[in-house]
Length: 101
View 1: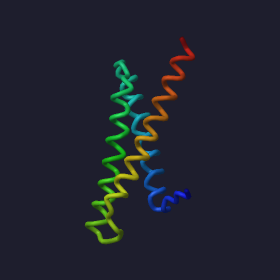
View 2: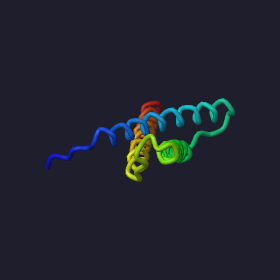
View 3: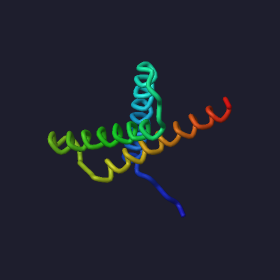
């Protein structure tokens, strides 16, 4: 089976991945600088929420300006990228914690 993902959707996945990683990084830095405990679940929610927000904003922009084609699957692709980014950072964090024990 040859599964081909359109370039447009791959772009949305990449953006969701990057947005999720940046938001998680900034959120973690904020919590650590405020000397608060860092919970993996809250960082994942931050990454997911950021990717979802960017996906919705981008499609609203396409719809309002008419400069693009708004599609619900674009939002889904952005969120999938955000989830992938969040999961990778959580697994990496858990691995680092396991190594330090």
